[in-house]
Length: 92
Image (cartoon, rainbow, N blue to C red):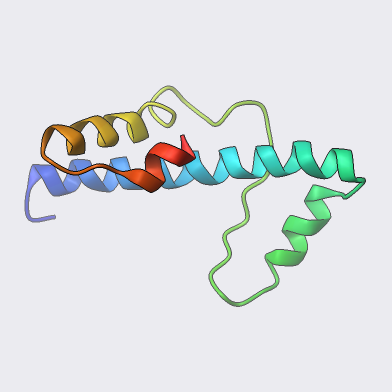
């Protein structure tokens, strides 16, 4: 990294990516349960596609203490600097 800001941004981006994807798959699990669909089989099937799908599996919560906090940190920091994260705000 060329700066401390870039190094910290790497952590924020990776944690936000995991946060969004784990929350998404947890929501899918709840939905698919109502629909009679095995979410694990669906995720495993999607993982066979060679188009950059990254398997995330449902579970209790979304990880450690920083994963659910980092997206909000990025949203807040960006807003203070004149940018609004529409997608990230909706995802969280």
